[in-house]
Image 1 (spheres, rainbow, N blue to C red):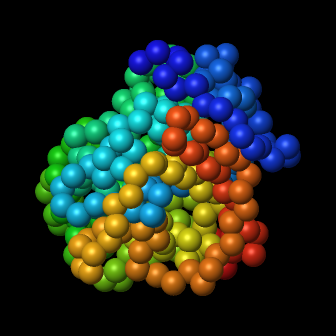
Image 2: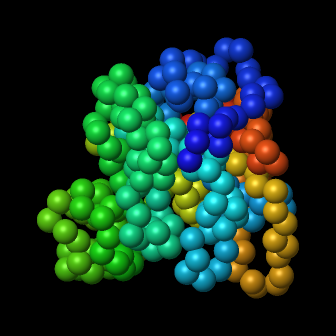
Length: 274
């Protein structure tokens, strides 16, 4: 991958956004600075023009929807470079269970620069992977080696039987996992920057609870359509979030892909446990 392959054109940027001076090669590719507040919860998705973010079956939806965009992988790697932890749901993990949830894995050509970002921010070499699974049915994979796993009493036995020694299992009360319980426990361990990479149900619950501060959304130049019961999902599934308002703070472009950054309006951001 050449640097030119991921050179983003900056179309809009709110002037008061927090700024962190990226290493020169990252700044040239991204088109300027990037800052993520701490503590904060920020999410990253890729969607088609008609709003599809997840496809049915075992296919890895993001790669298909993004058209394997090198620029999208670069932005994913950059956002991971800022994260203390990456939060995903069980369904998202299952579609990519062989993946390493790191910047270097998704965009290896910029691995050195991503490492420099983490060093300057005094972060661990890699973000902690956090997986939410009520059933505890997770296939073995490299991400589990030091993962933080939230589950129910029902899922505990399955996880303890299949998880590697380095994984940490946290059993929460109730038959169904609560986003509020997950966030409260998670903040005790990783109080800094938390990146959510899906899926739509988990993101919806975080939005419904008022935990999300920012959304990074890649809009890919494709249309998928949606039939009745075909299993395709939009960015929020399973909850009504009542027209939550977003503020557009940044737009970048690469070819026909758009890279949008939104701030969730303050009235929707609640204190954990509030």
